[in-house]
Length: 60
Image (cartoon, rainbow, N blue to C red; front, top):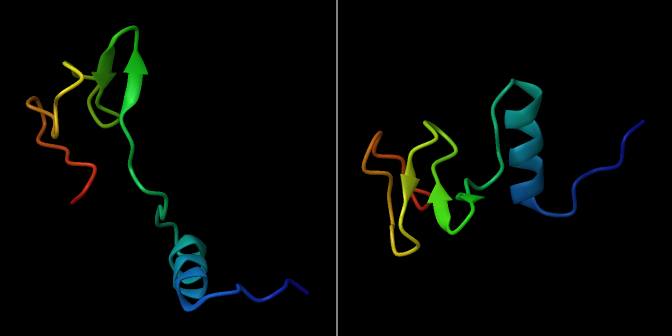
């Protein structure tokens, strides 16, 4: 028997994960001194807020 999540957000995340959805917050990857898009692999300057290649936005 598993323990219950401590918050309602945890319960919702567990519900989504059980059905194959990702619940982690998207983050930029790093490649040397550049940001790298986790979706398409596009490289950007450190000041980039969204991917200019595929439009991925970590805050969307």
